[in-house]
Image 1 (spheres, rainbow, N blue to C red):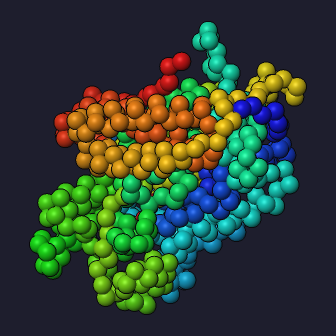
Image 2: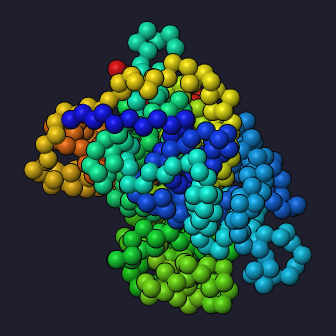
Length: 550
Ligand code: SIN
């Protein structure tokens, strides 16, 4: 199958979450043309679901040093301190810009406080020693997306292509290795028209979000297939630290309401974790056995503690107790969570909330500098697809929206500075850069896609989850090798569809996670391997880097 349609832009942004739209807006300031490619509607992204907020030093009782220190502590020896500091210190400017665009963060006045403390209500989450999480009720991500979408739509030089899914990057490889490979754009499937278009641009920025759908249980929406990381890997970019998958400790446990996050902000307001010692017994607190910060310990500690208590007691969930607050207070501070719990038959003011851990955030990704530049010239990555060095071995809560906002600014500035260089040697408007794949026949066995999809997500949960061993990882490796072979054959034999593209990406990302986990012979942050239960100080600051061999 071949397609000849080519679209030319100055910049391509793949993904319409906070990182993508913020990057597009900053790039568009130059007046150059920007294409935003997104596989569903512009609203559909992981950022929109963020409840907690944006971590940022805004209170006179807080300092940059303390935010840096909390980030480094959570990151367990793998953060890059200069990157952490630069992002933390740029936070207030990024927030000011958001407010100028119209973002409405909850103020203490909104909540009825009149205590003279800082204007914004600042939440607290696991691992933060200070209140520093700006939020818009408990739908912060939705508020930020609203503002970004409005701003993007108001920019005539940004064109948004909805229901367009990127298939692969357009790359020129330097076989002599004398210079970095170059990225010229992306092959993109127009889902509605069912044809592949070549998008060419001197700069391409990946902001495709995370990888939650690689796991059976996740807080992430369906779009989180790790597609940006998978494409960059196939193109030859360096990928780092994929073993560090963050499991959020508290997803609502309910037979039909799936993937609903119960924000860590509840624990910031005093909620405590409890579990039943035996069936029918009154649930009791347990986090004091695991960490001095108890229920507000860093997320890796809390998720592992819950996993261990559930295995020990044989219970299928643990509980969050926030009954110390009145119904009125809870409705005011957590309106969305309150309503969802009520739909599940749980009144947070009177009942315990049943919760379980689930895959939530990928700390690794496309290895970039603080400016989002990858190891391939002209290719940038921002947000959850990228690994800048901010999160290290475990992300501090609400640092990710901050990273998306700040690094998108740095990335746009870096692209601006390098634009002339990227433009040189860019394919001319007449040079062919067509997409070809093996065959144009429709598949007669779509069951293969659904089956492989389910199988990957199941064994990743069972073998590459919160508690790992080498034996489990080897099992997963054997399975993923077979499945990937099958998918590649399927990919080249049949007409490409959005489902097949996503399955292929999920399989690539699953293998990257397994390979990175097999390479790290220690337990650190989010990577716990019972065969290497201790942290190896020799591996402080040592990333796991993977790059495809051609
Ligand atoms: C939460 O609200 O608990 C999630 C925030 C985050 O993942 O940073």
